[in-house]
Image (cartoon, rainbow, N blue to C red; front, side, top):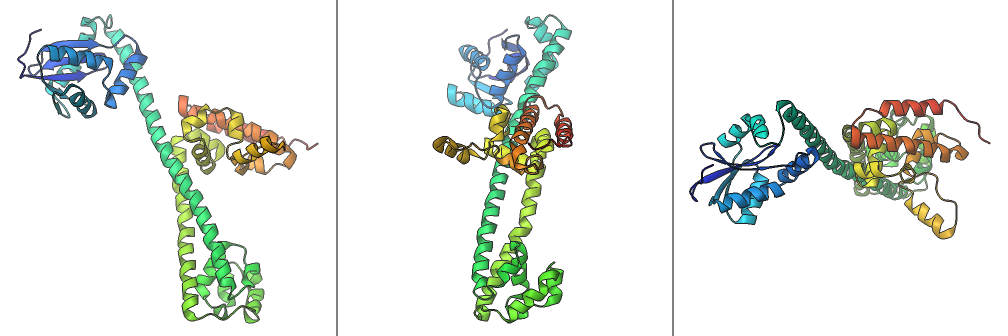
Amino acid sequence: MNEKDPCSRIHVVETLIGVFGVTEDNKIVEAVLYPRNPDKISAALDRQSSGEVSREVADAMEKLVQRGFDAFVFTNRALAETVRKKYGVQVDAVSRSGADDFVRENLEALAVEHGLVEDASEFYALSQKVTTLTARKAVQRAQSERSVIVTQATQLLNELDKTLNVLSNKLREWYGVHFPELNRHVDGHKTYAQLINDFGDRANIEEGHLKELGLGRQSASIISSAKDSMGAPMAPDDIEEMKRLAGHLLSLYKYRPEVESYLASTAMEIAPNLSEVAGPVLAAKLIEKAGNLKKLAMMPSGTIQLLGAEKALFRSKKTGSKPPKHGLIFQHPYVHSKPRKLRGRSARTLASKLALAARADVFSGNPLGAELRRQLDEEDSKKPEVK
């Protein structure tokens, strides 16, 4: 190994066996190998990919600086920036280099030459283990990032529901000044808003369009109430403002299923097993409440059972009243369709299946969802008697 002039550039090449210092003419002047342990190699590569200086990179840099090199070339831009700040040396980041290609083409021989492995078969076995571990970590990181998206989308859906409820009630109060009787004839907020958007003044309400809106049974009563209403007449400008609010509400009602569809598809992408058992929207809500998918997977089933019922649980501890039997999972038909006395047991069973599904999504990736759902359906068909 020949010394190089201080002004010469040196390529710092990261591989799955170690870190090499390679000159412009492809001579290896330094080699710092990782321990012969797939987990430690994968961990070092993971740290370096995020820009952290591992022990091996630090050793290689110190030796190369001692040799007099002061200009370094990396293909890892994040690591290059960290090295520049830490060592105060000139650093270039490139997408590919001849030195990098040279080392990787001869990696098997280098691993044997430096004693990391005995032969080619051992090298390929080590390579496969490290690659598998690295890929698994990459998937987990991707899941974690997508969990954040699920959390944000779930919160958006929750806020959208609150906003729709608040504005719909405000519209009812406002239009109730003009036509108070309509409130008892129309329960659905969306239909109520559609009525105001289409008719405006109560005098414009006509039977044919009421039937188109699905109000055929109530149409006669609505028209009769409109004629004899005790509400106050409204100026055209006031009616127009109510119609504008109703129009905005209808736009939000149209937007809501789009958000729910996006949320469901994202949940199925990052947590297919959990989505299979819980349904994608409930799966997303559980992930959001837990913080992320990994946190949910680490929870015992009893905690999953009560996610979303924290206030009721705290109140029961404070007052001595009965603790809640379920939280968000009450939304699952396996629980809410049961008689009240059976819901606690159903919630426990469902929570145990959800815990298994979440752990499979995070730790193994095995497709257990369909089997877990089949088990739930099988237990559901038994129809135990209520004592």
